[in-house]
Image (tube, rainbow, N blue to C red):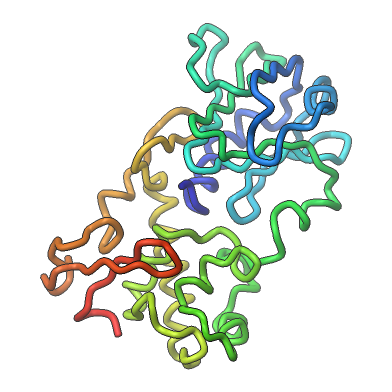
Length: 270
C-alpha cells in the first residue's frame, strides 16, 4: 500500500505539471471506489483551476481556485499519473481528467480501495484524520512520548494508527523501528524519552531516504509520471524474513501484530 513517501513522491512529480492548469473535462467510469464517488464530483471539478498540490498523511491534495480540494487516496493499488492524450486506455482507469493543455490526469485502481473526492478546505480534517504528520515540526520526541503514555498497544500499532500519526504504514514503521533498535511488539507505554528521541530521528531518516529514491515499488506503485520507485532495494527488514540482517547477519524474523506482518532483527532490536 502506498504510504507517505510514495504519496509525497507523486505530489512532487505532479506539482509542476498541474499547478496553473485548468480542468476541461472529467470522465468518471467507476463510482464504486472507497466511500463511493459523489454524483456532483465531475461538476465540481470541471472548469476549475488547480492552484497547488500538497500532501496530508497518505492523502494527495490538489487545491482548486474556488477553495475546494481534490482529495486522492491511492488505497492499495492506486496510481495517479499524467500522460499525453494519445496514451491508450488501460483497464481500471476509473477517473480520467482532461486538462487545458490536452494531457490526461488518470486515476487507475485495480482493487478499487482508493478514494477520490472534492471537499471543502474546512472538511480536510474529517477526511484525512487529525494525526500528526511525521514530517511536520509538531512531530517531536516530546510529542511522541506523550502519545505513548498509558498505551498498552504495541509501538508498531501506535505508529500505524492514523488518528495518532498520519502517513506511516507497515513498510516504513518496520524500517524505522529497525533503525531505532526497537522491536515492533514492544509496548508503547514502556518507551522512554530516549527511545522516542531515537525513534523520531529514525522515522525522519527513513522517510527522507525513501522520498529521495522515489518510494517503494513492491507491486503497483508508480509516481505521477509513471516511474517506479527504488527504495525497496534498500529495505533492511520489511519482507526479508529468514534473510540475513544487513547489519549483523542474524536471520530476520516475521511475526503478526494486530493482523499485520512485522519484520525485525532479534539481535539489533530490543
